Image (cartoon, rainbow over all chains, first blue to last red; front, side):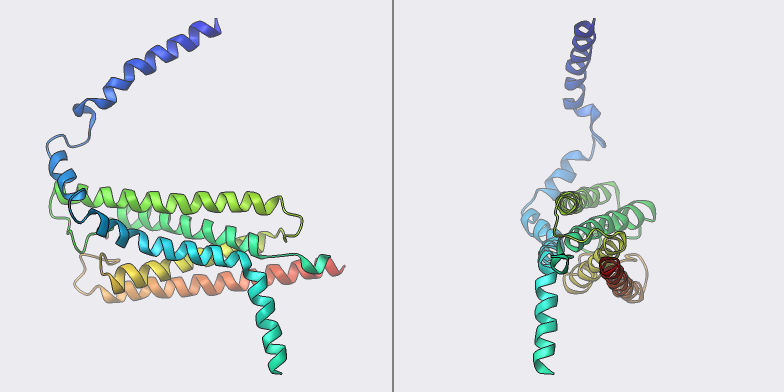
Length: 83
Length: 163
């Protein structure tokens, strides 16, 4: 019973797969080529780097916060030494 | 032994979650619902369907990036939960998340709005600067509130350890 049900699911999935690959399923069939040409053009890498730059800096800051206790205890120690 | 309890792993997890969710908040509210700007709307202004869809694609890459930050935050939180040497405090986590959101607004605002100028908060306003500055100020306020919450959570954890 379970085998029949899973076979039916697999058949349905197999039938749906080609539906995703036909161009009619894409949003904006008419302008797709123009959009792709401009997104994946010569400026693609530059745009991607510009877009990901703040996220990279944020990731470095977030990772540095993992050692928060080491920084804060060193800061306290330095302040105590100065006093 | 109790004195060696760390806050770093939980703060780091909270920061990543706050930065990621802050990015999603920006993308959902400003890019999609209010449509005040898109990721590259200053260099590729939205004037027709093609330019709108180009910006939509770049918004997608931005969302993919903040999705990775959020996922990393979830992983760090899971790891922090399993550690014996880490403080487990809701206030510290909430403070770090708020701080992460503020950090996102500040860093994204400085780099994207001010330095690179790839977009502005209100792209189609005559004077864009007040909105960009308000965005930066919101980042500073969130960071300060987050810092206060982390401090309160740390104090609470220290008090409960002393009892």
